[in-house]
Length: 158
Image (cartoon, rainbow, N blue to C red; front, side):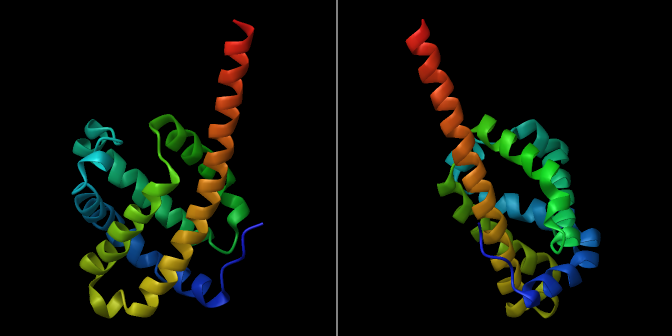
């Protein structure tokens, strides 16, 4: 079982909810600008969903949902399941998560400013990000293993 988040992190993340609700799409749009500096990562994404703004809106809603439920993570089960399925479908791997963190955390500061997105706020969001990332990485690894086992079984039967 993954270690739990500190009470301080939970409080800080929950307190950022209103700012995320107001500026979430700007944050995720900025995050994708940073992330897509790497063409290999950009290739993992549906560019039509980027161009239409659908993906930044979806991610902003997911981040807001996480912030609002960070003290009730069981509420996020269905959303996490959908994320895992989508990530496996598109080939997201554990090594992609640091790139997202390196794009997301500065994007929060870019949009909200250093006064709101202080070092303490970014540290809390970093802890929260990696907590969720570890859960996703483990679930995705399990799903990749299931798919590999299913594929191996199919090859043996054929």
